[in-house]
Length: 220
Image 1 (cartoon, helix red, strand yellow):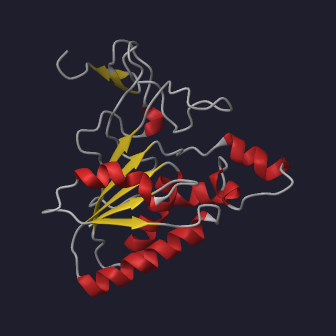
Image 2 (cartoon, rainbow, N blue to C red):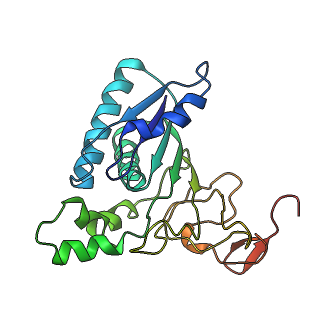
């Protein structure tokens, strides 16, 4: 199965373009629909219980998790719970798309000043107990992690990019794609350019950088 986990205010219908492109002979699409305003640990626990029950019943040996935005935080927490309880986790690939790995500053401000607080704001705030908890343990070596992110998106008038990455894109088109190990993870992203999102550094002409070491883009 390929499990798709949406982000804040999202729904499974947002995954339709990707699901439509899946090779149905090899993969079965599953979606997790949840109330994204709830506390993230509770959401991750519910997902873990669902997947654990399905795994015991269906005996599948492999699973891919694809998550967008806040769904990546939920998914990492779920994967850690699955690792802790399963004899061998069936999850062997984890793909996050534009996940705010370092938290969201506006969530922290909202949690402090808004007259009505959405519960998940406490967890999405930078340095929250939840964010710290998902980095307290590394992902299993079995779990290959792939990170997709965009830079210079200008998608919000309220805040800058918040996925914890630096720009590693060509100056002309302002987009980038790379695979990497997640923060605090001992697992290696296959073909990774950098060991963690925070290690990406801005470079010219689309070079991909890890700290001070850069490699040219493919075909250069």
